Amino acid sequence: MFIGHFGLALAAKRVAPRTSLGTLVAASAWVDAVWPALLLTGAERVHVVAEAPTPFLRLDFEHYPWTHSLAAAVVWAVAFGAAYLWRKGYRTGAWTAGALVASHWVLDLVVHRPDLALWPGGPKVGLGLWWSVPGTLAVELAVFLGGLWVYVASTRPRDRTGRWALASFVVVVLLAYASSLLGPPPPSTTALGISALAGAAALVAWATWADRHREIRPEMGAGLAPVP
Image (cartoon, rainbow, N blue to C red):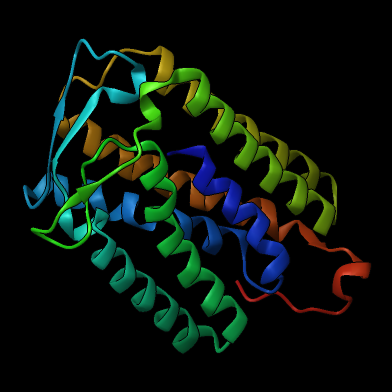
C-alpha cells in the first residue's frame, strides 16, 4: 500500500492534534523509509519484474524481514513512539505515532502477496489485493480521501499558504501514485532505493510545511499548542 498510509497519517491529526503532520506522515511511512536504506546496503533484497501482471506486482520482495515482518514492525513502533515521547513529552502523540508505524504492516497485509513474514525467518502472509487493480485503487483511494476529509474537518488554514500547501501536498502524493502505476518500472534496485529515500524525505518536509500553516479548529480544541 502507498497512499493509504498517508490517509491514516492525515486522520491521526484528529487524535493527536499537537503532533505535526510531518511526524505523523513519517511514522506511517517509517518502515518504507528504512527499507530503501537497507536495500542499498544489501541487508534486504528486492527484484524488479519488468513484465508484471499488474503494476502493483513490479517489485518481488525477496527478503525484507528487518522492516516488513510483524515482529520488526512492533519493534519499530515501540522505538518510534518512545523516541517521540522522550523528545516531546506528549503521550498522546507518542502512542499515535507508534500505532501508525505498526499500522503500516496491517495495511500492507491487505495488499501484498504472501511475502510478509510474521518474524524474521517465520511464515509469510499476505491477502494479495495487488492482483486486482480496481480493488487496490478502491481501497487506497478510500483510505486516503477519508483521512484527508478528517484532516480538513479537524484543521483550518492560518493563511493562504495553509490552503495551497495542503492542496499541493495532496496533488503531489496522487501524482506520485499515478506515476508509479503508469510509468516504467525502476531501472535498478539502486535507483529504486535512492528515489524512495528522496521521495520519503520530500513528503515529510512537505507535510510539515503545510501543517505549520494550519491550526486545529476551535471546536476541536482551542488553544492547543503544536508539538512539531
